[in-house]
Length: 274
Image 1 (tube, helix red, strand yellow):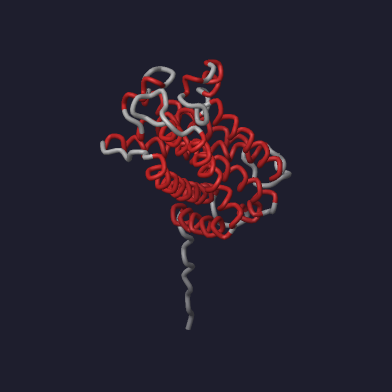
Image 2 (tube, one colour):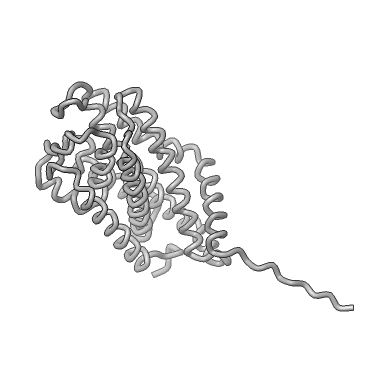
């Protein structure tokens, strides 16, 4: 009597990606130092600077704390996407995790789907945390218009995708985790300064700085978030005198495309791969 055994089919790309996303989240939340740094830095900067510059701003009906907080919420997702992706992938490559995964049935698509799930969950948690603090402390107003909630959704989605892809790119061009931490934090902090996150309103910055910042996503993410949490009269204090949501969408969408192309060109699984 002959028995036949049917091999169980391997999970599909989507299922593998979801499983990898769960694993990434578990691994992330087990690393307490990384969790604290990722979530605490944007929150502490918002609370410290918001209280230091507190009081009335040059925008009628908007306090300095509200103006800062609205931009800082947008900048907070850079920490959970660009910074965490860049540092995390570099560490994974350095300790051999990427090399081991490359030898398994998991495809690159499934692996990066898992990373995007990690970024999406942690970024959403960051936004909820910062909004939850900014509402009682700075009297930030939650949007009542459904259109603004829709704006919040697409700015958030395009922002985390574009920044996560750029984190992948940076992780592929640096040589070590130490180098990744130094480079990514330098870029992150510099872009916040020239993008009008710390200096409010953005019109107080030299035009040349803002022109440089306009090539990068941080300025546009923060501008999109300000359009959601601030009243319409605040738009007059943007560089163009309006929210420019069409431009926000174009720039962030372009960074998603550019980031994907760059990642495909330079991504490597091992430290010795060329």
